[in-house]
Every structure is written in C-alpha cells, then in structure tokens.
Length: 154
Image 1: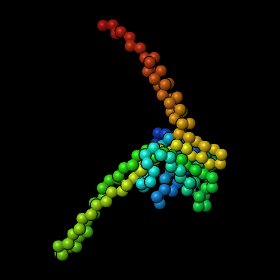
Image 2: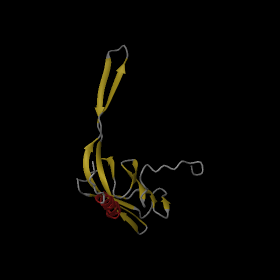
Image 3: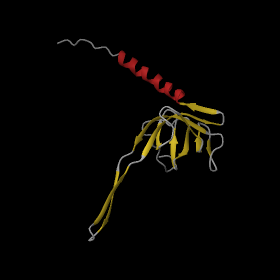
Image 4: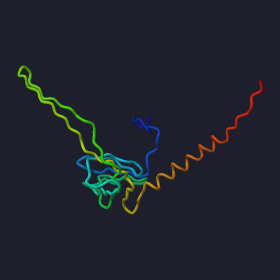
C-alpha cells in the first residue's frame, strides 16, 4: 500500500501519453496503438478521423486539464470497421389488462484505431509504441533457441 491506496498494474505498464476525448456524447481514454469503440461515425473504413474535443492530456512529465477542452491537443485515428452492438430487448407489460409490447434495439458503432496523440509540440504515434514491444519479442525467442535437448542415458 502506498499512502493508504493500493497500486494496481494489471500486468502492463502505463503508456507515456494518453488523453481523454469526447465522441458521441461519451468520454473515452485513448492511447496510441490501441482502438476504441464509439458511436457510429460518418467516415468510411480506412479513412482518417480527428478528435479535437480533448478534455485532458497526460504526458510523462505533465498533466493538462482543459476548461472545458485543452487547446492545441489533437487525437488522430483511422476507422477500423463499422459494427453493431448487442441486441437489447425490452417489454412493456400491464398486469391484468392483457397488454404487452416487446421491442428491441441495437446500437450502430465504429471501431477507431488511435494513431497519434499530440499536445504542445509533443506527439506520440502508434509506430513509436509498437517497436518497443517488437524489440522485446526476439529476446524471448533467443532464450528458447538456446535450450538444447541432451540424450538421456538409460
């Protein structure tokens, strides 16, 4: 415990830069190299998307909170695909009256790959994040390659 609080990491280190954005009336935490699911956007698959309503930006050294938005902060991404959410079923019912009405709804959604978070001259791109993970993988592969099976004498 640190000062009465429990620090949880869930197996991964936090990124250097992330932002909180508003899209479709909802707030989303975004990091380069990850994707988010938002309400349907008008862009086609593969097209660029720019989110300029940035509420907060966190960098390695600073945290900037907007009033209401952070000036100069921009999050860029590309549309991965359009999809539909799970079906939600509802029922209106009046007891003893023989009345009931069923209804269902599905949300139209869009998945967006976050490619860049930029603020105050700093920009973290998805390409800058992926090589760090790729550099760690060959080390594990080399460790596996060093294991040599020796014959066992009976």
